[in-house]
Image (tube, rainbow, N blue to C red):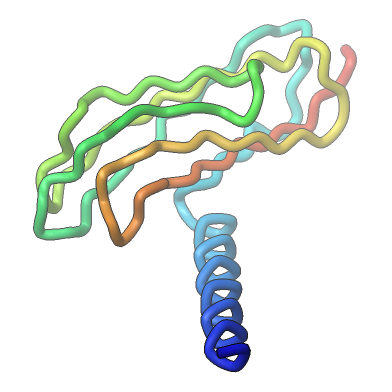
Length: 125
């Protein structure tokens, strides 16, 4: 039993690490670069692709902080189509390197959560 549990945990860790690396290096990451907090809100639109053969139902979005707001343009993404996810980030109150996450919850058993990453280097002036 312990051996099976260890194998399952190792597999889950490998899958999670692989997905995180793909997301970190793929189109799920946007770096605003160097921005000034006083310039206000910045935004970026991600594309969420349904690469399955079934409809993908969007159950909602949420961000890792109150500084990011996200909105997706549809509740159902048809097979092989995309949805637009607009993310607005307010750098007010932040300084230095910042990384935040936006999550899209779906009904997919294969991938119930899509993670998007926004980054910025926030300067005072």
